[in-house]
Image 1 (cartoon, rainbow, N blue to C red):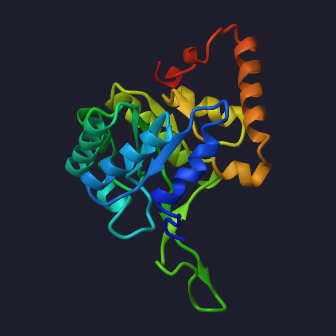
Image 2 (cartoon, rainbow, N blue to C red; image 1 turned 120 degrees about the vertical axis):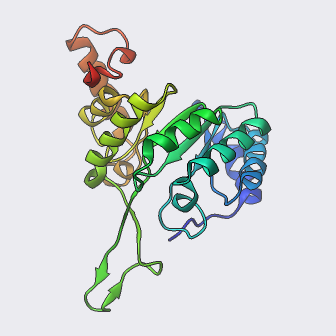
Image 3 (cartoon, rainbow, N blue to C red; image 1 turned 180 degrees about the vertical axis):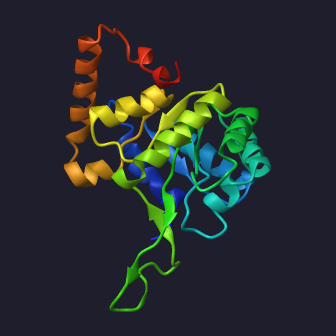
Length: 232
């Protein structure tokens, strides 16, 4: 599907409704050059976003996402330009499809980024045996869900040793155990995406309830006590 969307102008209507809720809204942005990222971030801030997440990692759009997110110098320039343009937190979502992950993470930190989101989808493909060609027009796309949990965990673990800013863990989280694994690897928070489609909106409550029970059973008073435990 690429990155379909109505554009930043139409998104204002969505934000008017979204910010009425009790939870902070983080606006996800993608562009090709630092100036465009900054323009979109300013608009998101104006719409009431509590933070912005820079998509530097999507594997299925040419000239965007992963194609620029594997270049540490470009990543630093984008983060730096956005940080100069807004006064809300700036998160950078990184790709696992690079051997320079730690270097890219450090580039986010050098650019002044407030946190790293790890990871976006894994570059993959599917082929239709009837049509005898790739299912996706772009041939490759992003694989998400439980299949990439091990990859996501490894990336968070490596980044935790490489940077000194918070990490948000992403990839295949469907249970409290999954979330706790990410936090023990070094994530200060987690994202849940495909599990909403697989298990419904109640997955958030199930995960947080399970984490609370784990803390109580292990004599812990804060989820922060779990972060990075796998490194000890």
